[in-house]
Image (cartoon, rainbow, N blue to C red; front, side, top):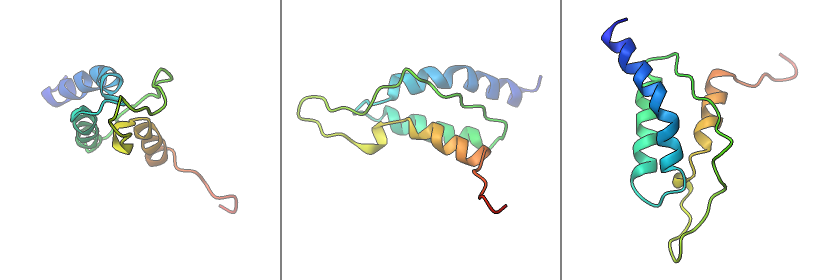
Length: 90
């Protein structure tokens, strides 16, 4: 296994936990996870599996809800990129 393959595998092994940690956090963590997924997707064969444990968006005290804190859209983007919907007339 090449060094690149080992790095890709290591990323794939930990990305799901990073998404769980960063989801709905009002910190820089969601942005870091999004950036990491974009970089990893450039190498191809990126298998992002949907996580049913992610909760709906929420607010914490007086902190507003930020759309980018909700990481569930990563799964939607992955599905649309790798499994595009076909039109009925195709």
